[in-house]
Image 1: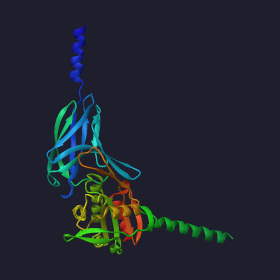
Image 2 (image 1 turned 90 degrees about the horizontal axis):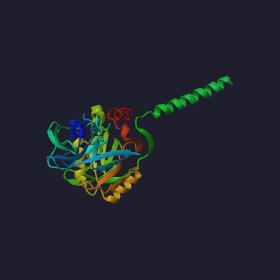
Image 3 (image 1 turned 60 degrees about the horizontal axis):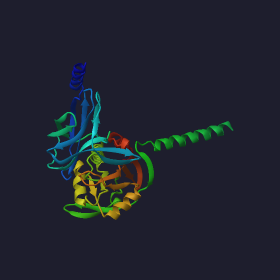
Image 4 (image 1 turned 90 degrees about the vertical axis):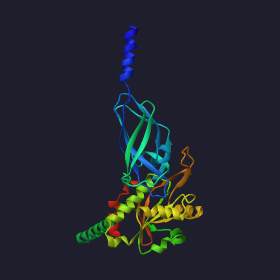
Length: 141
Length: 193
């Protein structure tokens, strides 16, 4: 019985896991005088267990942080978020006026059409490197 | 008596209809005198005083923001640049976009100008002393506040992200973020120009 339980546990552990897919990554082109930009993307979890985005790194900026913008009574507020839960079977969208990866102290000027790489670190899935494009951006909504 | 009633009703209807027509804008109608201000611009390598009254023959669109803002400010200035693109060329000369920083500590007139003109060569970026910015922000009901956060990017600034339209000395229309769409603003400009 114990052996069966052990097998069952091992099986469930090996089957129950998050499966993270990163899609539609883009970085906003900003004036060369600006040292900040933001990256937007979709994080899909096709697995059956939640995962957490805990860190982002990029070669194009000294620091990358997860931030969230919100509008309340016409006032835009931006705050840092330590981690983001990616529930199983769901997609978390980082979009303008919402969650975004804030790229701080850009090391180079970003030009529309350029390819950029960002490393996303998840608690369970580990590091995932995704490639995106620099875009002039979309309107607020 | 019946004729008199009919006349009164038709007069009332005409008044209501004309009011409606007058107020049909995509931006929120404010229609009160626009408070005058003077700030510092950056022109040909040096600081220059620039006042709202310098543009009394133009429609002025103002956005208050800051250059360390990675999301909302570039988006709003992009909307204004697209608005100009949607406007017939002959009318573009009659429009002036002003970007006023609410972070004068980091945004000098030069930085503000270089930031603004990146979105459209005709845009003007303005800065000034903290006191000047504070006073103008108050006049224009702009809220801004430096927030100390644990972000390594330095402080962030909470701010009102409205676009203001000034026409003939009046603060005519205000666009909250949901209405900040190039086609909506261009439509209003068409009516005013």
